[in-house]
Length: 482
Image (tube, rainbow, N blue to C red; front, side, top):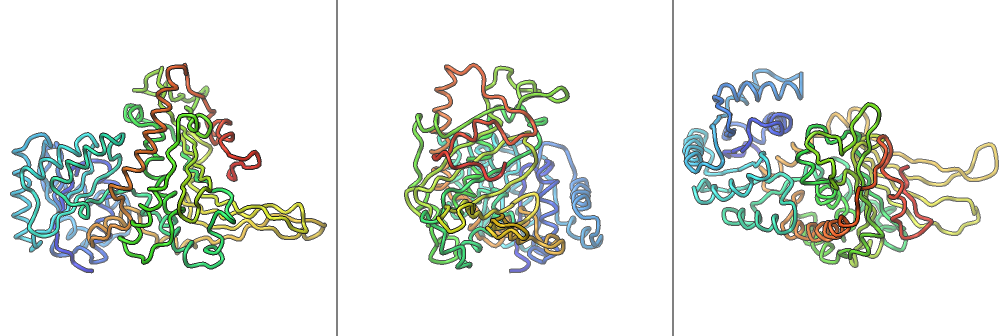
């Protein structure tokens, strides 16, 4: 598709997300011709900016992302941007946005198509959705809303927000965005699973012992202590990114590569998810906080953090399903801040089989998501100059040229919003199951807090606390990434 007609309103147009991600992604889509002559973008925020000042900010944002741009193209792109100072709680301001959108629709022949992007603090999502409805901002063409995470902080708040959005938008017009689903190696999971007989034929509990998902960050909470106190690692990373990855790994094969068929298989899987009991949480889940050093704060010393906080900066646990190719296979996860390095990876551990070479190790399939794109198989081979077996890695890596072609996740996902493809976005029914699981774990932890004076403290620069190695079902299981 080319030259899609649309008026896009970005709530939070002066913010960091818009500057770092949205404006460069939109420019790349403009260069590709997806949006060209018949689009306009309205940036809204409290700041008293002008159209010209917003355009300068858009140009700066693109330059920061790419130094080698066609300046004439960039200037033409920026001319499609308009600014409307806006207080999201003031209904009169929505009328100003509506008038500007209608004027731009006529000027750019946008055919009544509207996209609304919520790039603001989550506490405003419901207010904006409500006023889009009661102030009648929707157009006569397609109307789509993009909602950033977090979508609620538990099932109850997420359900309330969903009801507010439903007043203006049908489910097939809601795009709950998770930028992890735009990452190259996340999008590679299904093609790798389904197009390679070597992998497809062993993708079952008969051959797979367990699956391990690690999302490690080497930074702390930085200046986000206040936000993190309301979230924690479980809500911040597991409820969205990790569950998205797990769902792609464990879902059954869809009947087609359509959005509808893929989401149907995801829902079938999630309906079979085992919700952990309080006893199971005690056995198979670990939470902890990073400790301080001589030179750096621990979590409890970070600005805007309660010194008695029991908010976790590390979480590890287990997910199991009763349906799908990995039915009853344990899927372990861990995520945390101030860990050894920034690395996001998946390890599929195959069952060890008896053989004539008794010292042979099990095979693994590893998918490196970040910081580079890589897949490798760990297999056994003979030693060259002495008897015995050694481990070998067969690697599939992207070349520098291939890496240069990989688009940013936001560029991919914005493309999908423009063309109306919901494959890589989360349906409400899926999100509801994620929250059901998270709420069960949180409830168990809240109950434990009555008798826990302080959470486990783990040293910075490690892969979490040693207790995370105790969640496995079998004493022979361990983290592959150590």
